Length: 203
Image (cartoon, helix red, strand yellow):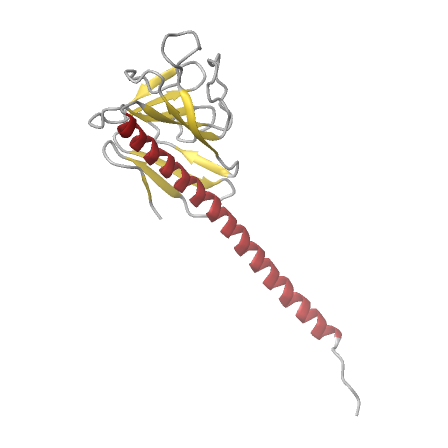
């Protein structure tokens, strides 16, 4: 009995099917990675913001969260200033009576300087957007945005924006921070920061 092998057409069909399946699998994996990056950025920011507010209430001392854009370049930052790009920092005020939600201290004053108590590097594949009232155009690039709370829990949050020339205070009752993949193809996640209550993320 003769054994029949595969014809060239059959082999080409199998190779074509494998190629299609591989391309589908690669696309699915890439999308899963993008979704993971977006979810990770949104959930981490929500957690840091919530912890900052709780720390401010517990310690009765102002705490703020600072978002640095990927091209943020401060003019003349004081010693200890968290200037790393594409990162989130949680900073506790050295002067618990201060209402300024930006980094202060040069090591020469009678009061302790502000200090970084936590930090989280943002994935370079993330695009972070703030309300246009805070960041022109929405996209965080060369800006540094801080969101903080005074030690008195009755006081609402205070937000400032710095583009390298110094901070300016802005007023937004509900801050919507959106996270998306720079390559697209993944759902956008939003972290919301209300005046009263903890930050939260939609899923």
